[in-house]
Length: 264
Length: 47
Image (cartoon, rainbow over all chains, first blue to last red):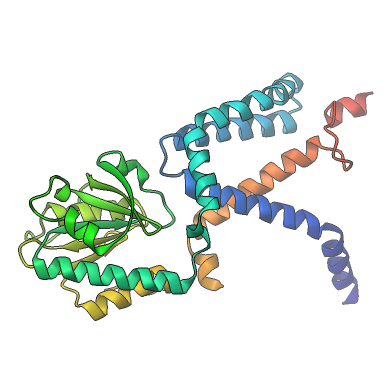
């Protein structure tokens, strides 16, 4: 009985550093994937990575010396090519790393949620139609290019101005990333679901569409009724009051329990 | 902790598998001293 146990302990003692290396690499790959997922260069990156890994594996397993030599020689050029291809994304990533947003506390997030709730229900009271998409892990910055770049600090006054029916920017959606409004008047993809209530307009369908394509949260205010709705993963919750809206946002942005308990 | 692990679990598992492949390939090409091996293992065996 002690034999296998001792061998297992010895194995762990001898190889735990390898495990740490693999886990660190996995974490780097995961966050790299999440960051580059929504960018235009993501497909190039996935394609290059697939070609590189499959060729390297083939050269290792089948002893293809020429391919192996070629891959080694090309590695340096490939690294330079990647830096050139992803120059805008790398610059943005380093920028975000140096900013305060990366290290935001739950308290700061709670304050942002309170401000968001106040803003949304002010929009509802005035019956200003609104569509706000809050980015989470999966990038939605590809939709920002369909609208007008803002990169402004989130504030109630700014949102009320954007969605005022007489302004140029009121049509389309607003994208919020880390407490900043990155773009307004953005065009989001419409949901293709046919089983929806016919009373749902294009704004609601766009809100559902963006949440089907990413893990973003879409907040909708109806221009006709002033009702507030919330979309996540293609599911819409309609006619929410302030208390329920706040609770849902807290669940999604702070507690992350939403996936475990989605609304029926 | 459970929620952190289970969130996006398919992507996380893929990344772990990919990380192992990358680690294995690098390990095959690097000496324990950290130097890049000039030849593959079979070439060395032949020598």
